[in-house]
Image (cartoon, rainbow, N blue to C red; front, side, top):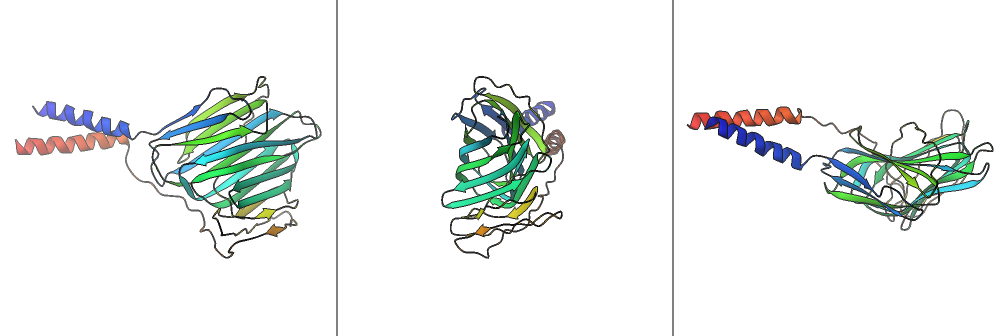
Length: 295
């Protein structure tokens, strides 16, 4: 009898544990320009550190303009105390644009040794973002470029949801999607785009992701690395760029709305707990002990 109770407890707890297991998938397996990409996320608990990386590798003509767009990005949950960043390689000039309704953030800058990185800290509220663009001008000797976008933050919202976006701007290449939860890779998938996805995938340095601010435009060449703080909130605007140590960039900032609202500094959530298997056996042992005492 006691063995039967023990086995039943184990089965029940394993079923409960499995019901909340994290699952991340992406479809379709191949896309054309303008196709929608779906990232299905199940069992994602609140206060997890969620990171979404979207990287495009595609052919270009030397010195040509290019643009890699994620249009109509639907984020079903909010990312707090996070960041949005972009990394471009094999370029001379670069641009990051984020637009959500009446809110707009644009950063432009010059590459050093063909590489450019920019990052903004803040919050990324749930909703549909009209467009997030990383683009610029390819280097004179470049035959391909790499443009990567990263969103990161502390997640609050539904455990089961879908992230949707339309891949636009490029017609051929590779789109690599990575999802990390609390620093652990939950998904890494490369999707061919177009009919002749020939570029060789290149690994970039990891970057963070998160938010942008309302009705702000920064439209001047800046140094290789730019850090700023912003929150996309209708009617609220704040942008405080921090130039890198190696130089003081010329930055033009245009603001509308209500200035003076700051975003709290990013913090790293602390998560505690024992391993799931140990938790199962401890709980089962407690139930078995209780059953034996009652008998």
